[in-house]
Length: 252
Image 1 (cartoon, helix red, strand yellow):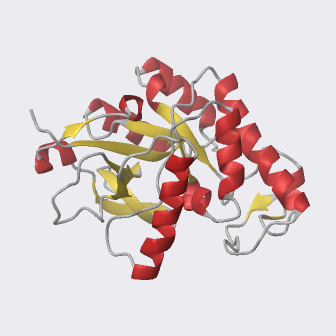
Image 2: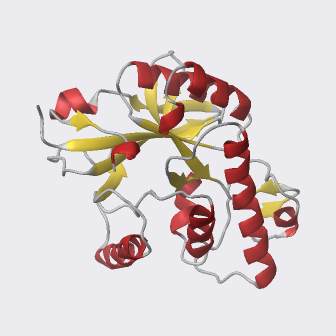
Image 3: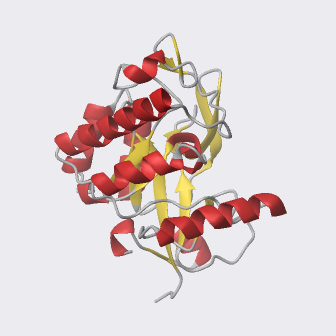
């Protein structure tokens, strides 16, 4: 049996019907081990049903979101730092401190997202975020507070493999050490499918994937949308290609 064990987490569960179906297929084919859910995704209800019907409800975490679609709460809609016309605008200044009103609005929104998933009958196994917003220096403490209050003990690292400038490595290392100091369980390494190309995989690694269907109907790891159409590379079996074993966040 291979000694190296990795987690492959599918982000964006609940984003759309296509994404939901792609994630179900990826679970069935053994391409992923876990997924994280967008509580404000347009296909949230369908995602909940699919997780329960397909036997991976225990492998669902939360994909905290402050950057896309409609918030669940009202206060944050009145914060120009996060929303425009009641919609997340994804133009957050990640280095700007939040004022008291913004902090409270973010706390209420993230708490509501966690509450919605739990109310749907899913245990939140682990946490990460849309566009990695949970690693933003002034947002991270709020994310960690919400995780603690909701019994979420496992959380994604700041990316620490792949091409990273030296100064960013220092910042990421400080963030990752703080997670463990605060008592959160993490993997040792985290990156994307692109980051692992051509390298020997370290043990206790999480790989991020974004399963979707391309225009030809092939299951892909989505890298972006072009004119609303998902584009990316074919989603392949890392376990088979790299001779490693999949584990889940539940094994941490």
